[in-house]
Length: 246
Image (cartoon, rainbow, N blue to C red):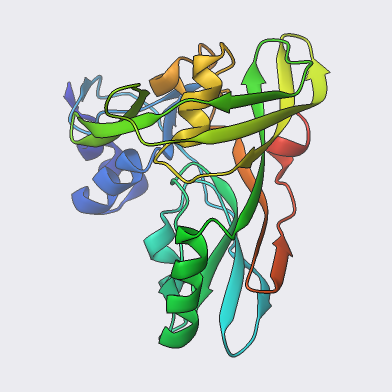
């Protein structure tokens, strides 16, 4: 028996540090099970499968902004390196598992204008996701959200006393078996807002074990499809796992 990251390092002929990073990023599997703990003891003959991250595609760029279709399993802060841009700064962020439109600013003046637009709720964002259960009727979720640290990571919950206002509109798109594809529009931008709100109505996002999904998936099936601000509007092509479930 050896620690998972050490076995992976030997199998892939990479450093222990790189192996641990791959596991921490959720890219390493044994059969169909994700390896979640880099220091977990595993048999010496364990065979790992390492998933690759899709290429970063630039949707649009000019003197003010760079719009990117972020692949899943890539942290937002890594994008500047991925597109080889020295003078860019993130305007907003997406969770590692979330794919879709992500915006970077090319100058401070535009960045400040964009930040003001977000704060004044003048930014429109539309997402698509696959959720647990049969969802067939448009629903508006108006429930305050509070966020705290749990196990060193952000965890959000609906909390009437401490929560900040949060509004999410969910519309049905497609039903496939006991899973549904939905379109989501958020009127506020709280941490894990979509994940918490969908879980609260009994439809957690597929793969989102943290907020109640019972289905294993390579990632949380959430995609930031479109965003508009300051006269710009961008849309990101849906990846294969969002276009059609299984």
